[in-house]
Image 1 (tube, helix red, strand yellow):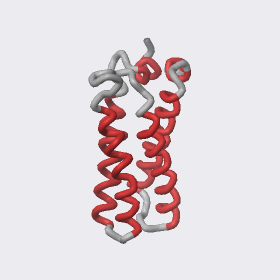
Image 2 (cartoon, helix red, strand yellow):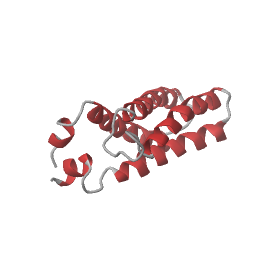
Image 3 (cartoon, rainbow, N blue to C red):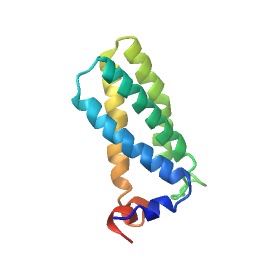
Length: 132
């Protein structure tokens, strides 16, 4: 394992990757910890900021080009940027079900599933974790 492929990439890529790793770690904590508490809300705001960073930074990453500079993964970024405020508003309105579904959906789709694709051969995370 070497961080060199990640650190030698364009600046948006390490920002995106490190924010995603931090969001994944905090997301696991959020899913396991008690809900509705001050720590849950505090970590939640940090998670929202990290996910916004992950989604926004991905808009400057164009390693896979299927539609001009864009790929289907960019649709996921737009989805996350739309769903983050919806999920926050749901929490503020005490709509726990909508908040939970939105947050779990972003965690699962935006971090777990999309994250697994970064480990495919030829991708930077594959090189960082498994070597060239």
